[in-house]
Each structure stands twice: as structure tokens, then as C-alpha cells.
Amino acid sequence: MTTVPSPSPAPDSAPTDRGAVPAATSGRREFPFERRHFDFIAHMLYQLAGIALAPHKIEMVYSRLPGGCATCA
Image 1 (cartoon, rainbow, N blue to C red):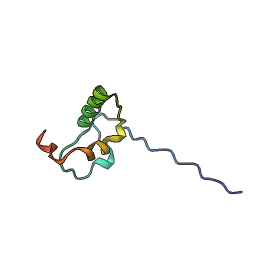
Image 2 (cartoon, rainbow, N blue to C red):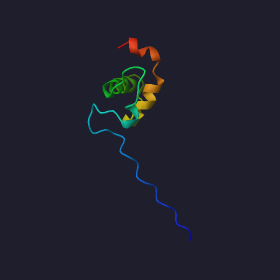
Image 3 (spheres, helix red, strand yellow):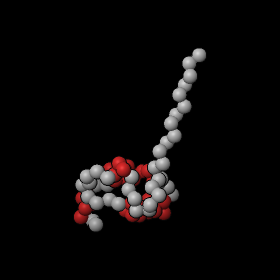
């Protein structure tokens, strides 16, 4: 009889510090993007469309912003 290894627990993707950015976002960026930016976008998306974004979606949100957003800051 073979045993199936149990899946390892998922890492906690929610930073404990509200301003903290996950390790995946600590690399070089085309334009500044912090947790407060993500929180603003997530709040607006929820208010306008009822879509709730979990904090681990920060990379997805950044990747979908146009490069010209640096001039919007």
C-alpha cells in the first residue's frame, strides 16, 4: 500500500504589518506600488463592482496596471 504525502500548509500570504509588502514584491519595480496602493484599488473595486480582492492578489493587481501609472502618482 502506498502512502500519499499530505499537502504542506499554505504559507500565510497576509502580511501582519499593513504596510508590509510580500517577499515576491520586493524586487525591482517599473513604478512604485505599495500596500496602500493595493488597498485603495481593492476598496474601489469592491465599492464599484462588489469584487473583494484578497491581499495575496497584490502581484496580480500590479501586473495589470499600465506602465504609465508612474505619471499618475
